[in-house]
Length: 455
Image (cartoon, rainbow, N blue to C red):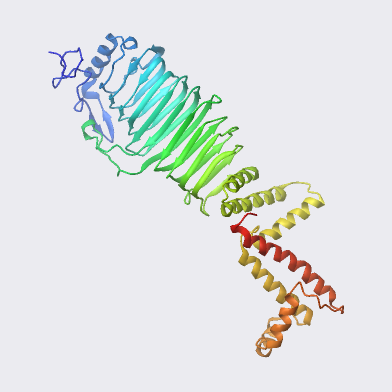
């Protein structure tokens, strides 16, 4: 009797289906969250032996196949490289860890609507043309030493919190990798019982280290995702889009010489422990509604802060631009602080940066600058009037003088650095010093007030 799957030439093995299409949900037991296939080892061996007899490299249609665990020697994970022509894994189900090692797909490879219940690993593989639309991942994805020589399209659906490691990837032509929302059904039929709420994609880590040809379209899209760790290492790349994402632990972009177009839209990095952007060119980066927060430990050099500041300047987002201007100045201050054998000019510049930090946080805090203006004017006025800087004396004087109109009128006249009715008395040096330092403080006050406009 033939298998009930249309166009399947194989004979029935179980449940009116052939060995390739039968569900296999009773072939394994769940022990400590892992599948134990020991009770069906003979069935598993027979599956791979019959598949071998089909001469898989020249057998293009593996659609709707339900794969048990991968044994050591099979067509997809053997010690010798295998060459495949057109092959289809559409609607296939991989019940355990799937390993594709040293496989070369010379023509089209289709993984549309495939379901990977275990881990999926591609080692030392090459693809001429691959399409994987609505591929379900419930466990980690790992690609190492993989070449995408032709058009590539991945649209991945997640139903668990997974890690994605893509190391030493080479992309030659158009490449699209999109992360979609959760698979809308539970997968108990395949021995997978855990199911997360629909609406948010959970990613433990995304680690990408690849090399891409110039002038190609390359797109990575992460939408509506909760990501613990993102690491991107590259020399040149196309389009990375992070939209409606929350990054919780680590975000790193390192050694990107030509980062291309990068979009961060509606990103929440408030609770991110470390943000590291080093040795990268961020010319076409776009930030929209990114919440950096005060908690992240930015591990960036001064030039990175300058680039992010310029990105915000181009977008006319001067509030965020000034925040990163302050970080740029703080980074430059550290450079001067730890530089050995500083000359007098560098020492003076470092002192000026310390003062700028203390007076207005490099033009970010107008209240701090205003407080310094008021305190310094009161201090210099008391010095000018000959009041001793003693708390008891000032307290006694306050009892009868601070409430008088005359005291405050004299203080206002002295504190005005633009007054012209000056007399050359024996304390003119105090007035001159007050004018000079007040001008410096007022400059910081004005700069801080203008933080909502262009610097």
